[in-house]
Structures are given as C-alpha cells and as structure tokens.
Image (cartoon, rainbow, N blue to C red; front, side):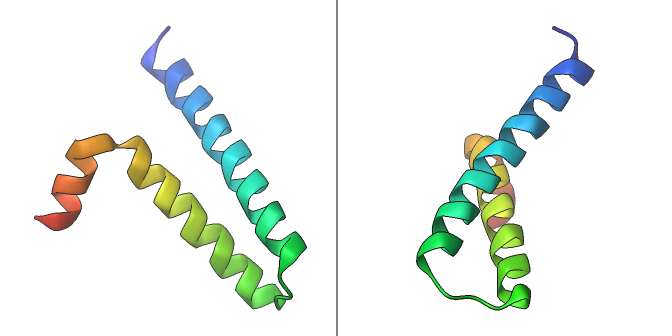
Length: 62
C-alpha cells in the first residue's frame, strides 16, 4: 500500500474512532455545543498521539 493510501486509511480510522468515542460520551453526558466541539478536538488529538507511538510521546515530552 502506498503512503498516501495508508495515510488516508489512518485518517478514516481516526475519524471513525473519534466519532464513536464522542458519540458515546455525549450520549451519557449533558454538554453545550461548545463543549462537544472541545471534546471532539481533545479525543482526536489524544488518538492521534497514541497512533504516533513512542516517537510521538518523546516529541511531546522533549
């Protein structure tokens, strides 16, 4: 698989996981629209960092 296709697949998977996590959270908690936007950003960023593995953690710490 080419890097472009792999990146696209990773982006789709990140979006899918973010949507599932946020939908579950929002379904169990009362939030304003601003809070939903913030949750989406927070979850997406956290998943992206997890996807970067140890090298991403080292960059964030360093």
